[in-house]
Length: 139
Ligand code: UDP
Ligand code: MG
Image (tube, rainbow, N blue to C red; front, side, top):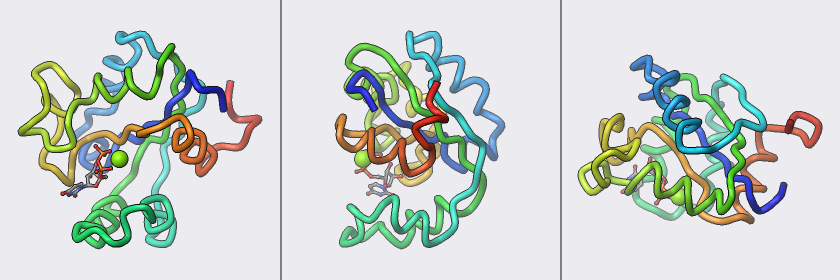
């Protein structure tokens, strides 16, 4: 995956609240284009694997339980400087700290149920995108 790509998931709080369309609109309006997208659900083993980098953190168990509590939308996105640009669009992890107008400020329920995931590096964007999509599924 090229370095102008990033990966996002619209999390279970966003799908449950019916916010997926609104969030995708925000993402497209911010200049990202969709390269692959699917509505799916994580098993416990898949969520543990996806978030294995956090396995020693105190919130890991709660995070895995939350991420398996409902459907998610997995999306590969493209834009110049995609990783940093997308992190700016979504705002801080804790919605209480997220800048006004960011997706988390407007849609997140809590630090755990915070509406969207955003990759933190080009390397992780590629790994996370490939977790959900094969090479031929990327448009
Ligand atoms: N998270 C949590 N409690 C915390 C920190 C993080 O439940 O104290 C959850 C939250 O859903 C977050 C995810 O774990 O999005 C991954 O954490 P990270 O620090 O990577 O935040 P992000 O990169 O998503 O902003
Ligand atoms: Mg992170």
